[in-house]
Length: 52
Length: 397
Image 1 (tube, each protein chain N blue to C red):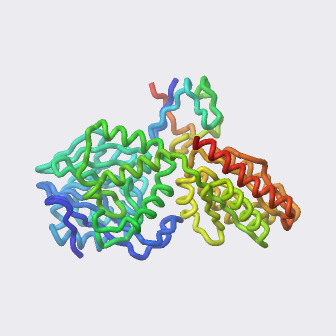
Image 2 (cartoon, rainbow over the protein chains, first blue to last red; image 1 turned 180 degrees about the vertical axis):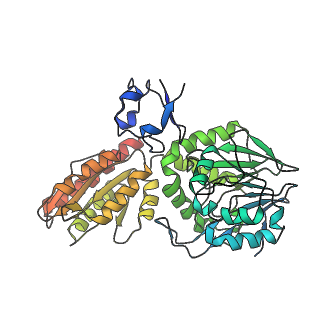
Image 3 (cartoon, rainbow over the protein chains, first blue to last red; image 1 turned 90 degrees about the horizontal axis):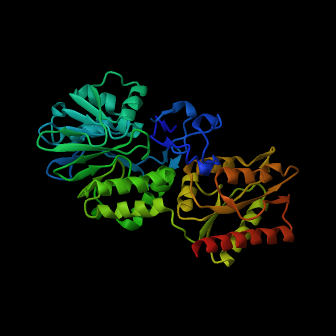
């Protein structure tokens, strides 16, 4: 499932991952490290909500 | 204090801060302006305000063209305090019927303890009637805050762009055609490098969106610096160039020194870059401000850092500038690190982790020197410069 950052609107897509921060494609949002942050605005996972 | 006419219906009613030299840790050698704009339509509308202490200047300029109490609408394009600081006093004096901002603007202004304002939120595509003209809104999230928004006055064809396309540049001449490029260009670059750079991907997408929306404003009115009326495309094209971070054969060597050893190493690194054909700037943190280092980084491909060791830590001025540069997320950098130490080389070696966290491709291992660098170490420093130079040249092919 995709997750959207409620602060800046960035969408985390598990199909893409976050390659710039060593998050491989296929990584579920739930499986992101606890210290992973929004690559655009820097907030933590707690400020994301399901996008669909 | 007079308002400055921009079009028949739009006036500048901002403030000029000639004396500010430190803008939240960004050195502002030429001061700045806080731009607020007044639309003299049937429902007079104020766009943004100024820093708190400049409230009297803004109100005096407004009062030169209209009784402030006649203002019906306030639009907040950006809730940073240099644009919202005067809002509480302005709202108390004007008593507007409505205040428009983005969703995040509402959260920000509420958290700035302004809970009793008659706030209404707007999204991209929303339009409001200001009496005889229409203002439409374009959300510009992360350009450069989550709340950022553009407002477009349709008939007059004026785009109000919050901090985007602005610069810290105090001037009594409010238009692009009245200011000399040789004076403002560095300040425009510096503003992009220090404020907008981390959001460059968003800039590129946003410019594309605005083009597709068919907006081609005759006038661009940002919240700092001057208004673009003669050639607004100039600053738009500069943004497109800076955001693309296109390769240039340039590198910076950023360092500090305690007893001259790290400085000698820095000079050899710079010499290697120079011999490799790379434009190089040697930036000592004794001499340079972090915001000027950021400006030099904007068009660089190479970043080489050097630090001595103090109490088993890297030198404090280096910790400062590296923390600052990391936040700016410059892309496509290649580089390395070096430094001198007395008895503990670990902090210099740990600069490899710092470069990795900044996504800098490391061209060579870290060079360390106990106390004073010998000839072999200095040659290794020169080699580091040459290697980085070669890597940059490869990227340029």
